[in-house]
Length: 417
Image: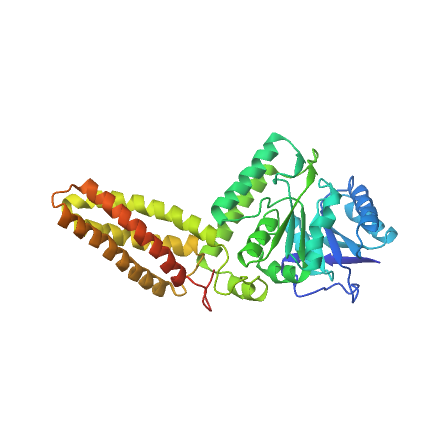
């Protein structure tokens, strides 16, 4: 069965369900989108190879959706001919370029249980297709991605592309705290109900589309399954690497700002789609929280030490300790709120800072008490010994601070994370 859908404004396309009049009432299990732009030379070879593979190796009903991105050559005509000759081919045409726009259009108009996509050059070995989609079909996972960067992946490509790919993913890990290994491998699949919920939030219509979708999926607690792939670079790729890098960096900045300001409805999606903790009351990601808390703690301790030494000559030990601890406590609370516990926006911000100051008061009690005891036992000590004692006392206070902040920043109704 073949279908033809013309989409003139894919950004406005509803993600609530299929819109093509020719879609079957009971759709296939798997719908694989192949975005194309001026691919008249490779399209037929790709589609016939993929069609044959699905018929032999995939034990589920499957469809191929050719998503034409405003091609100027004979790509669309070839796609229509293939749809008339082969069973299980659908064609959609967009008036705008952009891989993200093509995937949004193909996935939002699909009636399949699982929506996927792969690049027309078939750089990824198709033998990874069943390992990619099987966890989604079983319900074990929500999103699946092929990865070229795992230990078991086998990749053939130039050094320049290797460095760019690894560098991009390192930037993602550092800036957006992502855990998936490969954001832009052209080999992904999503459960359709998940795609329908996420697509309206994905703003990018080009190459950052994949990254934005994955970051949102990860932030709402979806399970992302990674498959090591065999991948051979296409030397005839038409991707403008410098322009793609520029747009990706802009996308990271835009998405990071939205996450920081809490403008995305992550809580609502987390409750409707996300996977709850295995044990009630024990949040996910405690190890990650400890690592981020520790990094912020080290920076805060260094800042505290510098402030204490600068203030001591003018204010004395107790006042210097109070001011240095107060300043670093406010900054520490803000940093932990945003980066350790992922609380965004202004909702409950005032309450959080008040509770953080209560925890600060406990730290002040511990450190000031230690300083008082030191002066009682060793009245003529110098400021460097005082600093050593205060740092040790701060370690005790820090442990209690982590426990306290986990309570302060616990998930509550209406919070943005």
